[in-house]
Image 1 (tube, rainbow, N blue to C red):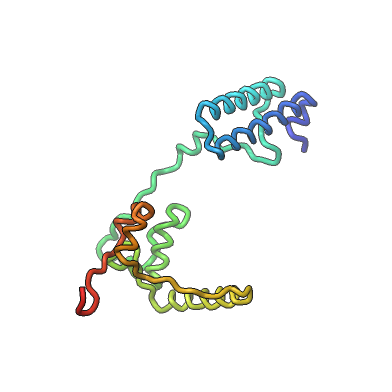
Image 2: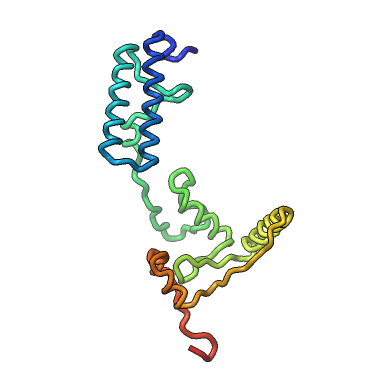
Amino acid sequence: MPSPAEESGKGGADISAKITEQGDKVRDLKAKKAEKAEIDAAVKVLLDLKAEYKAATGDDWKPAGGSAPRAKAEKKKEKPKEKPAAPAAGVTRLGMEVKKEENLADWYSQVLTKAEMMEYYDVSGCYILRPWSFKIWEFIHDFFDGEIKKLGVDNCYFPCFVSNAALEREKTHISDFAPEVAWVTKSGSSD
């Protein structure tokens, strides 16, 4: 099936090529974090070319092999995500309470906790890996370790604890993580 540009003849094809080139220019400017005024000017040229294409062909411009973008009205129809309500008396919470398609993060958390693979710990970002999940981790570790050893990579180990002095030297790099830093102030009988 020929594209609208092919159907409209050479004029539409020429404009289509210009649109593609201008679109690449806009993406390049955005990637390079160019000045807003420069990006806006490039976008205006792109929109003018698309309007010219529509005037010449009678159709909206579509990228080669691309599908039409979703209408904005469709996006507005999406329902806001609701948290599951507490179950009624006598109802168990053994099943999944969130659909994967609606909220992937909550669904995945429920899969892990309801399968008894993981438990939450009272320290933010720390989890308890139960036997099943730890066994999976061991399989992944053993496989990956074998593969990197085939490439001649040597293992190394980094400390789990970092001294306060080391953290102070890197404080500009870790400032965003400061709320999650667990300060160990006592070990055995020493402070």
